[in-house]
Image (tube, rainbow, N blue to C red; front, side, top):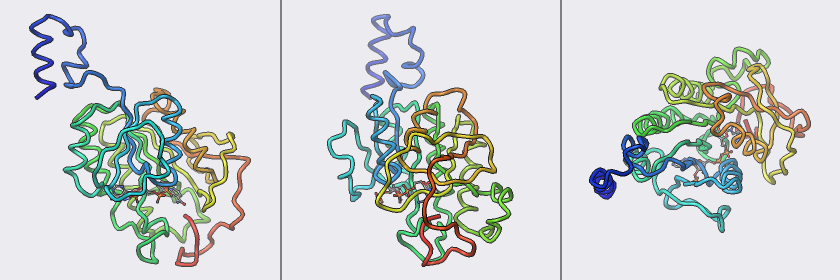
Length: 267
Ligand SMILES: NC(=O)c1ccc[n+]([C@@H]2O[C@H](COP(=O)([O-])OP(=O)(O)OC[C@H]3O[C@@H](n4cnc5c(N)ncnc54)[C@H](OP(=O)(O)O)[C@@H]3O)[C@@H](O)[C@H]2O)c1
């Protein structure tokens, strides 16, 4: 209502007519970056990097989430649940975002909760559909998705991980990527191989993105945050899938060689 009144006043005064962004979107500016999963291990690093870079950041979070890792940072919160489309729609209606970052994760699939099968049970596909719908509706210019190496058809490039082929989580993540790619919303997908368990090591500053989808490696979340900043608003990084790789970082735990079960840590 307020936005409509402002628009009518600008029409009456004959000002603001040369700013199609305002007229088309109903918002005075479109600078915001919306982060999903901003209270998670990766999300916290991403949010810190965005705030440090001076971005206008909003973290979409559940009412009961622990936000203590974000204490003291200059940012906004939108309260909702990724499984509640109404709360997603309201978030996109309340403010204009030029970009969004999805660093959310289903705890069941990362081994921090849920069943021992680590199956995300359609979580990533279920949340992608409303995120895309409302991002598209409100003209978001870039959707940055943190995904996984081996997602969907990518697993075919890794014969050594063939035992993971039927993984519900990887199939789900592949399907979510497909929805994003086919949506028409400009996207950047950053796939990671393995990320460390706690305590989180500091970033090395040596990670990079490659379009070689046969690359699998370990990478810190701090480095993934830096790579997120690198792709934000970068047209050369738009509508492409990247694998994150750090030639100087290697986790001590061995790579899985058989089915992932309760005793296996990380992806
Ligand atoms: N962990 C790995 O080994 C690994 C490897 C490769 C790729 N990745 C990918 O990296 C990304 C982030 O992983 P992470 O380890 O940083 O995850 P994480 O620490 O488990 O964080 C998950 C985030 O998602 C949020 N979330 C979950 N369900 C939600 C819901 N229904 N509504 C709103 N928010 C919800 C959580 O919020 P709360 O704070 O409320 O729980 C939290 O902020 C994911 O795409 C993950 O699959 C992870």
